[in-house]
Amino acid sequence: MKKLIIIMAVIMAIFIALVVVTNIQQKQNVEGNPFGKDKLHTETQKQLDDPLYQNIITPDQLKENLDAGETKTIYFYSSTCPACKQTSPVVVPMAEEMGIDMELYNLQEFEQGWDDYRINSTPTFIHFVDGQEVERLENYHQDSNVYTEWFEKVKETPSE
Image 1: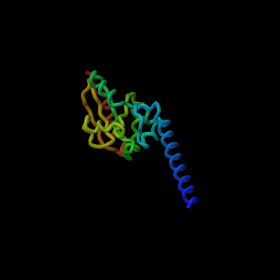
Image 2: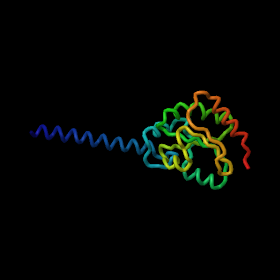
Image 3: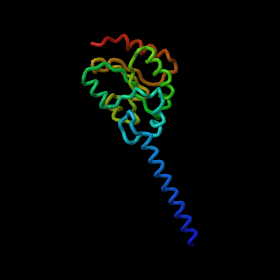
Image 4: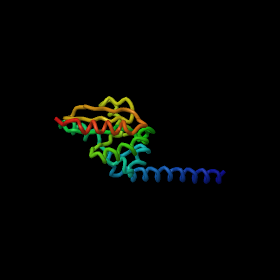
């Protein structure tokens, strides 16, 4: 009986140690992240060092920019969205090459964006001029020309 109690105590100690180590690792992973949050979804954590997901904008930053009447191109995505994971390697370099400062808004981390910007699905791209939405592109498109044409349209949209 004593052996059983000792074995159970060792198993419990290992389990507790594992939980503590995992929590410490998660805290280290999210320290200084661009989302300004203490806890991030696992899929978001995986994207922290990915060059495709570096130009992040937070809800407060976006609201402040739009209230100030700025022109913005925003890519609304979710770190858990399979279509977004296919879209990002196409559109992020494309926007850079076309000289468009496209910022990324993670709806997995900031769920209020679904309602605030009437997002129906991800990925969604919205171009704002003077703080107002003027262009929108929704959903995944296999034909990359759809994105090229949308970005060209955005570049031609005059800032008022």
